[in-house]
Amino acid sequence: MIRQLSIRRPDDWHVHLREGEMLRAVLPAHATVYGRFVAMPNLSIPVTTRALARAYRAGIFVAMPDGVRAEPLIPCYLTEDTSVEELIAGHQAGDFFGAKFYPVGATTLSRAGVRDIRRLYPLFEVMQKHGVPLLMHGEVVDDDVDFYDRERVFVETSLSDLVRHFPELTMTMEHLTTKEAVDFVADHQHCSRLAGSITLHHLLLTCSDMLNNGLRADYFCYPLVKTASDRAAVRGAATSGRACYFLGTDSAPHLKSQKYCATAKAGIFTAPVSLPGYAAVFEAEGALENLEGFASIYGAEHYGLPVHEDQITLKKTPVQNLPSELSVDADAVRVFSTPTEWHIV
Ligand SMILES: [Zn+2]
Image (cartoon, rainbow, N blue to C red; front, side, top):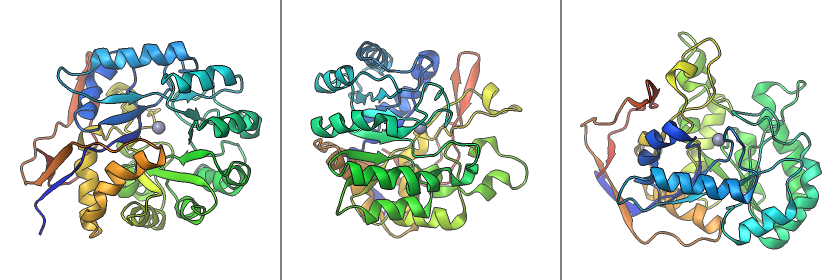
């Protein structure tokens, strides 16, 4: 049995670090593990301009623990008014990593998002030409679409249209949750530059976990966790060794006061347990040898970036020393609890 494992330093291609005290509290758990991380731009003021991206990046570096080297990557938050010139110039200057599509109302702080993705097609045309990646919260938000069908309907309608129109655009369908979405990504490798990221919690949870024995706010996130057969498909995809799937935690902290109340916020804070948690899933699926590709190689390749030369070592030990929560001002954020014997050494 493998008890120790060294892999190239991993990257997290989707994480929420928030701002202010929350950023300072959650950043170390991330930056000490992941060499690069895509810090989502859905802040209280969405990161829609180069100046905002630069300010956020600078704020992350101020909060970085001493001696830790990690690179935050900030996507531009797309709105229906996004300036093509600002986006392209910002990407070329390194202010923007890519561009993030949020449908209006899909998740935390997505009010400024996009109503109709087709309105962005002229922008996507230019992004394709200049090699700017498109990161997607792939759900259709519509009163006529059931919550559980949001991703499936996006795949059937928007995503199938996008791959037809933009075969050369680097696209990431983030946080895959359904069999239809993982199959679509695999089935379109020959004709598109589409890949998908996968969270730890969608590898572990189903809606039954969220709804059994009382409503579990800890397991509530967008996109919602789905059925057992969806979870099996997502686990199969993540651990398959196929380069079209890679790590994106979507770790999303909320204060306890806003999580354990009548209107619980959506989002699961997995950062401190994420890599050990992924290792446990890959081990359970008999695919530990595929962890490095998923965590450290395929995402970088998708975005045309070099992989890291340094390594990180995971060791199996029954000692549990992971924090159950982190203090934030007078409040706290609870860490997702998952059984894993893997620890980063
Ligand atoms: Zn997210």
